Length: 310
Ligand SMILES: Nc1nc2c(ncn2[C@@H]2O[C@H](COP(=O)(O)OP(=O)(O)OP(=O)(O)O)[C@@H](O)[C@H]2O)c(=O)[nH]1
Ligand SMILES: [Mg+2]
Image 1 (cartoon, rainbow, N blue to C red):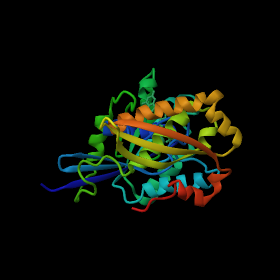
Image 2 (tube, rainbow, N blue to C red; image 1 turned 45 degrees about the horizontal axis):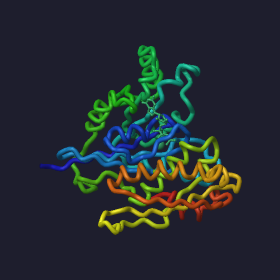
Image 3 (cartoon, rainbow, N blue to C red; image 1 turned 30 degrees about the horizontal axis):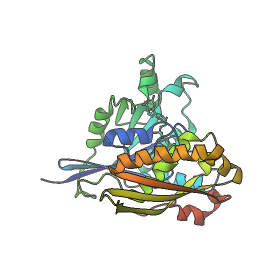
Image 4 (tube, protein in one colour; image 1 turned 120 degrees about the vertical axis):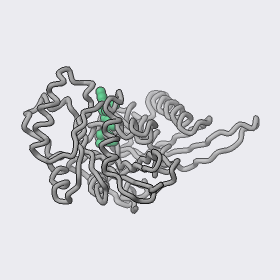
């Protein structure tokens, strides 16, 4: 049996549902999701092996205008994520297109399309969040607008939330497969380490529980991560993590009155960690202030947020 592989980059603006789509395709959550923009900070690989074909999906941060060094590394991660792929999947959010001028494609999307043109990258257009559309006929308008900009190989309206249309997308991506040995073991799901997965689960809860700008200035560093047996001989995962924030006032908000906010974050993060690893877990959280870390390349590196080499 000749092995086949296909590399697909998932790109688009922030919050359009790229990570939700990756999780739905894999049938398991490996990328964190939130309603706040700039949730994904690095390039994340998701691997799906079906018989002779291995799909490698590259989830990328939402393309945006960077405001700091972290933003610059995120934008670089988008560009690097598109290098050497067989196909790009441009994800757009169906809903906002009816509120704005219909002929006005957002600049981040134009920029991505320009890159497909320059690098001759075959691309599939995904119109996501169709579950939110009342008038499905509007999809035809969107298709018209985007097809005038680029000769997309396929256009797939879908919902990463309900899963409707996701199989069609996988079929379209599969058309780009090439004869090639598999790059990952067939049972591998992601290139993220277990420690990074845990840090991301904690950051997701911070994004969900905290308001506005605080989560954008947060990084999570796992200091201890090991499994031990309890006195009853039961395996338990011990995790100790430091939450870095940018201001002392933010630290107070994260802790909350009498520690209530931190307790809640810790408890929902622990539940998810237990679900992901399938064993009980103990989670201890500390909070430290690191002013301006998002403009400090050394700290960005320490937090593992700069570009990973292939
Ligand atoms: N109704 C609906 N909501 C969706 C759908 N897909 C994603 N969402 C929601 O959209 C928000 C953003 O989803 P993400 O998957 O984090 O988006 P993203 O494009 O990865 O965002 P960044 O990582 O910030 O670039 C979340 O609140 C999701 O639950 C969908 O098909 N339908
Ligand atoms: Mg994301």
